[in-house]
Length: 388
Image 1: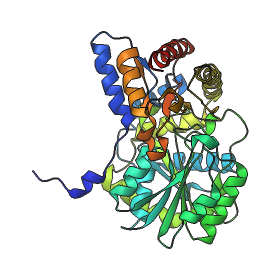
Image 2: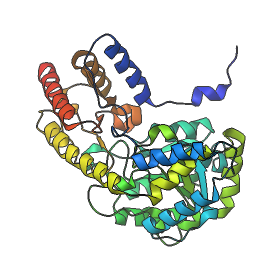
Image 3: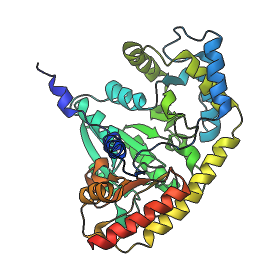
């Protein structure tokens, strides 16, 4: 059997591979602390679950519009207009089965073979995977631990060529937990306008900001007509298994994203869209509790990491990830992650899983209980002490 050449260009998410290894060790009776997967450890709020269950009972089991139901699109447009201080309507919204399709559709709709795409590195691995899959050329925006993962705008400017088509911005960032400052966003917006670039702005963690107010690059003058906002429900509302997300974009792009939806999944499940509407319109107290709990866990875990010789970890400003530099331990990222799991039962991800510039770092998700995080810190400290 001959597989299409393009499949060799398709990457994966290492988090799921490490999860499988960790589960296999658990099946052997090992005690594993899971800090590898980017998933809230909370259950979906009951009002959302009830809305989805009732929708099934009410007959929301049939086909719907490929772009999403009109009522959900309207609610999303209102939410995005308020949270980003921009003016968008239902006709700017496409609902998808999770947020990842917005990445995929952006590449398929905008990037021709040989076009260059600027993307954060280290960054969510699906960016680079999708760029390669469609025949684009990935050009890294370096996020270096020695500058606490800040973007050097002059480096970005030097990376732009006549072939550059798209820039990806992710704030708060996965895996770094960093937030792009307002001045940097303004400078990146200027570069996008001057060079006629599209911008995919991944904002899936905006309700998990621990300091300051969220700012979107799409809110800057001249950016709304060239920006695709990516967001979803998985992280904020603990709805990872529901698979519902959305993109907000200029109207001329909508028909192309809808066509891609139609050709792939037809549309997002009808009952799930009812639940998603309840998530946005219903009580928000649980989401604030999630955020406050993540912040408290962050403080415990990151301060604990920084107390371990050989580890230096900037304080994340958003999301639920710590991305410490472990070069002081004398180990590579892969060695550190593999041996920490095998010998001490703590599952984490090697930094290079998020791109070449992640080498020297480890990603831990602190979406776990404070008790488990403290147990993990004890094991990490013992592991580092043994190997120094």
